[in-house]
Length: 84
Image (cartoon, rainbow, N blue to C red):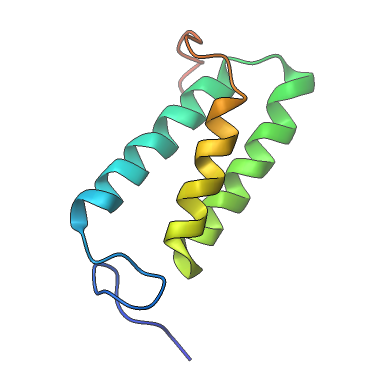
């Protein structure tokens, strides 16, 4: 069974498109900052980010809160990581 389409409100799905734009921007920022970390730290952080990204499909509000927690633990001014 599938939930409502993206952008359509539901009990745990904000209907505000600006919410999703902000969430996407913060996910990109988190991935950029994680890519600049050392390998011993980067891999667990990226695994957590993948979990948050997957959670966005089911519970965007909770995923946003978890992303906030993850971002709080990352260095704020990490240089851009390598591009592929």
